[in-house]
Image 1 (cartoon, one colour):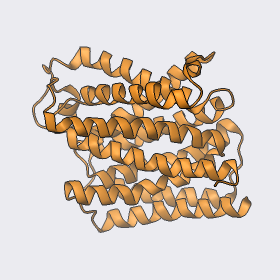
Image 2 (tube, rainbow, N blue to C red; image 1 turned 120 degrees about the horizontal axis):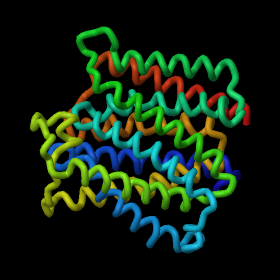
Image 3 (cartoon, helix red, strand yellow; image 1 turned 180 degrees about the vertical axis):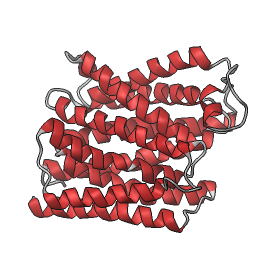
Image 4 (cartoon, rainbow, N blue to C red; image 1 turned 60 degrees about the vertical axis):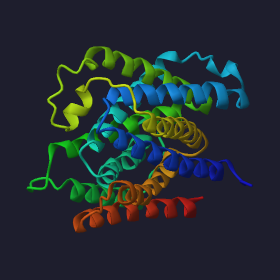
Length: 306
């Protein structure tokens, strides 16, 4: 079906965006009732079970757990924990589409990091596209205006962590399989969220205002029966998306995979409207158009180069 490793990698990247969008939607839905670390821990346990009990037996078996690069896996997992925590905090108070749009500075940073750390080539026209995409992000953040909110910087921090994580994926993919990297990512999530929960799960630091800080410090609560399906959706989206995106960056150059993650933008708009009733305003549409346009141009340049 796929004629080259690059084509398979691109398909994996598109599949990963769907999984991650479903995960983000589930987390935003749960952010009003549960603590961030509880959501992340439950999601990570589900994803770890799916990865180790369902995916791993079909992709090389338990031998995939063996690695000589445990330190690199921990560092890679730590970057993704930082990225997820900051992004999910922003989702608690921002529309899904807006947070996703700002986060999409990440694929631009991946292209930059691929040059700085991996020695890959990005031509002047693609640098121009990166500049246009950055302009779109600035429009979304709206610094210096009354519409600017400090919480809008959280997706920027998330993007930096995410870009660093994928730069490591590209380097580690030479010796590590996608399922191995996905397994250790979820293991890092379990350890980190459990540690945060032990420190904040009592809820004594919760300001009770329903904002991002409340989401971070809220006391743990036993999930309602109707919410278990949402937790399961988050876990499935995280595990499958993590496997597919790791495979994509193993098979393709980082500068080729990164723009394909822009497919999450229309998905985020759709889910934001359907689930939360959030419709982007005029400036948000302008910023999104610039970001998506820059990403599509980079894909077109890559296809011509190929």
